[in-house]
Length: 586
Image 1 (tube, rainbow, N blue to C red):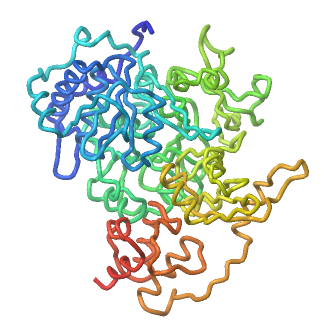
Image 2: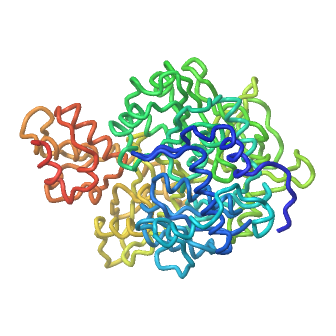
Image 3: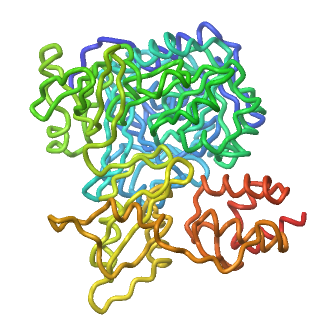
């Protein structure tokens, strides 16, 4: 495409901060600290190597680098070269990453350590190899000029492609440009007022758009981006310790993480933003005291977000606020007419941060990105599928989904994608996926029926799902039913399924909350967390339905109920529950 320059790009915005604060810390990771000068120079050298390998505007680079200072160097280098990044989270199953690479067709793979494109035939640059380090040392470390790029970079060029769950069973890549970044930065400056030198926690993976918010809040304002390993970011004790240790000033966390993390002593006079799911009054009572708290809203189809409420207090109620700089939000009826204040309609999003659309899916793009009849000629709006209303003061309130899409632990999940995977099993006839519980207790549960003569082994099916889907999309429990409850029209009664988990009696054979050995009480705690009658010592926590959030809750429960502290790495790396039990006695 021929791009017309209209606004500033990420490299320009970052380089302005590097020129202002060359000796200030830009990135902290363990014992590594990079100043703005060092980060800029390393990124410039790698960018020139990438340019020589064919990276330029509107060319995707698959990024497979684990959490580290090198990850930030790599991401920035891709953008300085003029390219866009396609993040491949090392924790994603190989099949998921392979699909993303095949679908998005990146020009190059930039990897480090064990990162890979899972068998795809891609030209690659291995960031931590001697060859790459030696090659980069021969390039200039000065800022990359427009004339050096394959073509000049404009804000209409691609910034990243991030994949989200797809209702048809196929993930879809959202293509976002630089165009909304300047307004995102202006919104951060106006609402959050980040000061140079303040520390921002990089909690979200770069595989999610919230990861770019953290990047921008730190590095496009002269702050310090604090990067930590996954195990140090697990909600609960680990996250609390990380916030405390690094004296974090700004953090963006989903309600599920906030609900199980102690708020005492962290982020004093700092800012916290709840996003990714509905914030509750209870969270406001806990987290809004002694700090400024915000509630953000915006799907992946816009540049990270489009509305912010706050600073909020318990008396304010929990809304999603007002549109940020450059954004427009309409509340419309089924005929695309504005509804009156106080009435519910569908939220349509417009403005500078709107994505181009979905990679390789022109039909879906046309169905979701519509001409904006209220905006400038040629502008578009995104049909979000979210219900909402605007109150008399102009503040927006979220009222749920128009379809079956759900948010789980801050992640966007299309039950249809999980159901499609389940029905690929040869012995499964029908499948329905629902969410049971709320916040930290929320879990994805699958109900299935077997084909005539078939046999469904829930444990085996769950293991195969885990090899194909990200952790947050794998059901905690799979239950086999003789038949589904139905509505009068014959459709599956998902409401009845969603409440089934709370009404089905699950007899417990024993309880060791107050008595028994430490080992027995550990097994009881695991059973309660996973909503199981009993667990066997030789069972694996994650095979039973555990996930990273529940691992954090297990550690907190063991500390509170048993008075023992178990390192998170023990739970994450244990082959079975017996191995965790062995750590209880030191």
